[in-house]
Image (cartoon, rainbow, N blue to C red; front, side, top):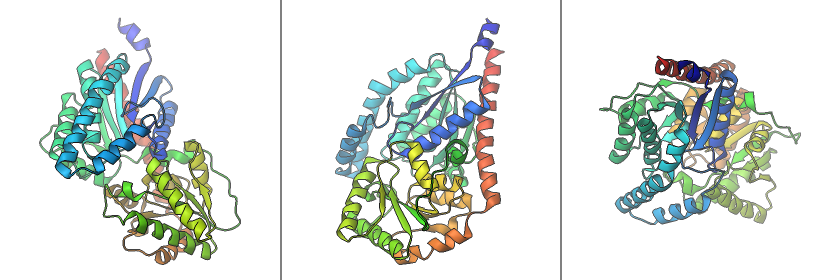
Length: 406
């Protein structure tokens, strides 16, 4: 019996947001898969989506409807309605799915991504559902390279804390020092494995994706457009109309300074819809820029980003992908995860608040950032740390399997 178990391939399920509309989430998922398969060719890795989606954008319509409903409800009512909707999703779709998928698995891995956050109890309920099913089936669980927000509600803390302590995690890691601090502060009173800090797996993009071609003899600036509706979750962002004008003025200033501008999004429906409105205003004002929206795949997004000289973005993984290819970025602040990542990359001086900085002032930083480049030592250490974090995950999984065999 023991021989039979040891001959059975170790089957690991990765749970993250691979089938969400945000290509940044798909990027880190694909980098994590690639690194795991290279470091542990004897293991079998499968990825499932925390929301239960079986293909990209499978629930885009439902997500948009829920978003519209919740946005029109007052705070306490909004949370109550969200909890009802999420618990019904967990009961009807997620629990049966995980009970079937987890059978025969040796471990589940939650991560990476900024998923230990609490917007209307979304992630607390989805992550708790997966961890609770794993505990019921006696399956080991790990948390890898996650972003941890400081916004957990009392109910969110209960969902996270109770689920994380039902069965001891074999290993837990977070992606930056700010996440470590938030994890420790939010989980006071729960006997949870203390996490280590490892770099985001998305930083490995340059090791698993090809660099894209250049198509201009001018310096190319990639501008990632993000909807103010998305930003409003975490910041006091301008109104939609004011944000449209800010983007248009930014592109106009970049073009006037002879930069070749490429507009893109990381793929969420609200970002794409908003970017199209920005494009209409640019056409009205006869501002010439390339419009790479939407991308057909993660590879297409990486090819565009890696073919630029500089990126300007709110979206974390647009900045991370550029950094992996040693392309500097001007990061636009909107929540604490960008602050934490910029500090890790030595980019704190390149983080700007659009509520304060004008398009003219931001463009004045473009040439400075391109001339400065990136710190080669920090870059090498971060990418090595991201891979070492995955190696530690593999070692923890092997250790748990050996303990089970004894």
